[in-house]
Image (cartoon, rainbow, N blue to C red; front, side, top):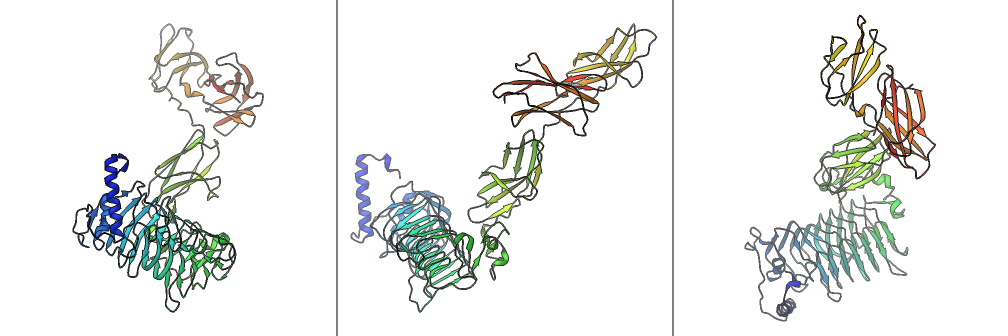
Amino acid sequence: MNFKKLSNKTRLSMTFLLELSIFILSGINTTKVLASVGNGSGTNADPYIITSVEQLSGVRDNLSASYKLANDIDLDNLTWIPIENNTTPFIGTFDGNGYAIQNLKINQPSQSYVGLFGSINNATVKNISIVDANIISSNYTGGLSGYSNINSTISNCSVTGSSTITGSMHTGGLVGYGSGLIEKCFTTTDVTSNSQNIGGLVGSADSLIIKECFTTGNIKACNIVGGIVGRNVSDSKVIGLKMQNCYSLSNIEATHPTAIYAGGLLGISNNDVINYCYFAGTIKGVDLFKGALVGYGDSTANDYFDTNVTGFTSPSNAAKTTIEMKQKNTFVGWDFANTWSIDEGSTYPYFKKYEITTPIKLTTTAGDNVVDLSWNLASNTGRYEVKKAITAGGTYTTIATTSTSDDYSDTNVINGTTYYYIITALNDFGGHTNSNEVAATPNVPEPSVPDAPTNLISSPDNGVYLWWQQVQNATGYNIKRSLIAGGSYTNILTIPTEQCYFYDNTAEERITYYYVVTAVNANGRYLNISMDGNAVKLKWYTFPGDVSYSIKKSTVPNGTYSYIATDVDINTVSNYISLVDNNVNSGTSYYYIVETKNSSGDVQASGEISITP
């Protein structure tokens, strides 16, 4: 619903309806206002289908029904009223079906129990993403739900994008205060609070199981803060929190000036079980009760942290270097067959469901001062990094990043230098795979030289007539003559390409002549030019039979040329000859032509080429 398009009269009516809705939520008014609901009967087998903002808001009219999204829902930054609160929680099933709720905005700084849902109890919420949320409230605040009571299950849910969650006590990126089960969820949102019991996933835990979850956002709070959970508030005689197969890459800051409880996974532990988890973020604040895994209390076995990134060294059995954290054998007892994956030497452990399994096949085409790359796109991939090295196997430098393209042209290359390329496919969840390595050497392309003319025949008749087969791509023909078989030949005339015959009226009677016809075109001599420091570097392709070259230069196009090198012998096994002209001035344009002489004495000139130092 777009409120901007409503008339003043309609705005007044709508305001009344919203106020009525608020009274209903607080229990003051018992009148039932039915919102629009989608198709379905509301059972688990036949849930209500939600396709619009109005239908999503209608969930509050039947809190025990089953619902299912059929598409993404964009709230368009309309101010959202959470679906119920702690006194009348949602007790049904909500299946996001893999879709997202976008631009969730809540600005209620004095209101508690705030999120998409204010509170859920004995409910199931699954398969939904909250994207680009902006929530400001008081206690019990989360991107998905402010409160999750016992026997509730939250699975395959996330809070991502440019989301920010700001609350007071019991604030988390996903859930403010959590009980029950949370599994296969993650947050990349920033969480901020001026109070305590703050976590990247859950603020406070009470009889809560967390499995296969992770956080990456920035977390800032006054006190009692953790990368996954802020605090276990359960009775110490029971296991109040069981955390298994989780990790946090969050940067954490506790702002209390004298005493903090801050941990990479958990702020304060209270008879908890934490297994197969790791932390590789940072923690900022005073040193009292600050730990890489748990701020106050003990973590259990098989948990690790990156000592290089965190700066912590204790507990020593859990402290590993960045190199060790990217090696599979570091993680003793971890399930890399079903739960975890790792790209040796490249990534921390990440969840197997985010693996990129499609092989990336890279191909390259080298040209003149350019290397063109192309590769196939892969599923489960968010972006591709183009990487280059000057030695086989690296070290590689990322030269470009793209999200959808399957090709890239690298123009930051030097002809004659070999480069080595790979493509790295990644996603935001740790998935990572490299393509094959391909070497490419950019160079001036060899010119397309015309074939030799064929079917040359002659006929003497007061001279000599010559005919031959026309040659494709030729722009002219050189007619050469000699008095002995095999030459040396003298070029007697160059004729245009459309003329495939020649009459030699200078031939004398009773003398035997030997003729050769050579096809030529503009590519016969190809000149490349570039700067070499403060000098001009010229480079060109040579042909078999070439014996010497000359270079001439002018300061105006097609001008009066002066030779800077003449009849220099060609003595190289390379197909290319180069010359450096140091006699140049910055800001002046120069025009060059190369002339090459072959063994027959023919001189072939390149096209003119210019450069301005």
